[in-house]
Amino acid sequence: MDDVADKQSQTNGCSSSNQEEHNVNKEDDCGSETFSEEIEPRLKFMRLMNNVAEILSTDIASCVAVHPKFICMGTEWGDVHLLDHQGNSIKSQPLRHHSICVSSISIDLSGEYIASCSHDGKVHVYGLYSSSDDMHVNLQTVLRSVQINPHYKKSSKSHRFVTGDVKLILHEKTILSRVRSTTLSDASMEGGVINMSWANQFIAWATNVGMRVYDIQARTSLGLIKWKKNTR
Image 1: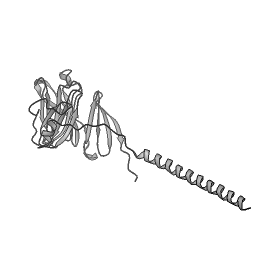
Image 2: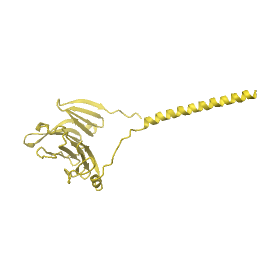
Image 3: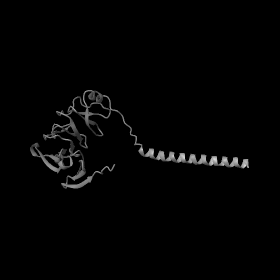
Image 4: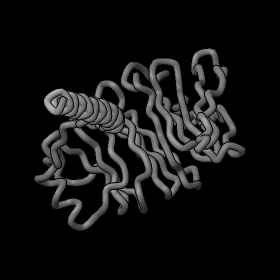
């Protein structure tokens, strides 16, 4: 009887032990699933040094635009620096000096024309190889964003850019190098234009309410995509 009891006790002990191991493994599996969901994707990065380090020792980067050929960096002191992808200055002097913080930079697809805007209300569009198609506008308002026509280089009809503050405004070069400005949308009731992007004939811009898309060829708005509200 004692032998039978001992064997039964050992069997129960093994069963309880196996059950505990099963529970632990189950908890580990659940934990690993939860942990894997919380892990953010890892991105490779490299800190830009060389001339970038020298620039940022006396100034602060306020915005950046990246092109396959180069990088443009705007600063709090109003400079626009042209750099290669290793952080070396391509030009010894900044491209254009704004009086205060550069808020946005945009580069056309060819990489030959650059637009910059600032809190001083000025927009400069300038060519890296020619100044004949440059544009300079003083809107006398704090500008948040600028986007140059991606095909700015193509023809004189392509010499356009858009700016964003409380309104989305299209600026076009006309005869005698004058600039005509047209309001595409009033965003004052939505907190103003925060950021925008221009691809082909579509201009997308974001406000506090959501994102809107405008067809520049049809000259019509394609609607509003509202941000999802945080329910937490």
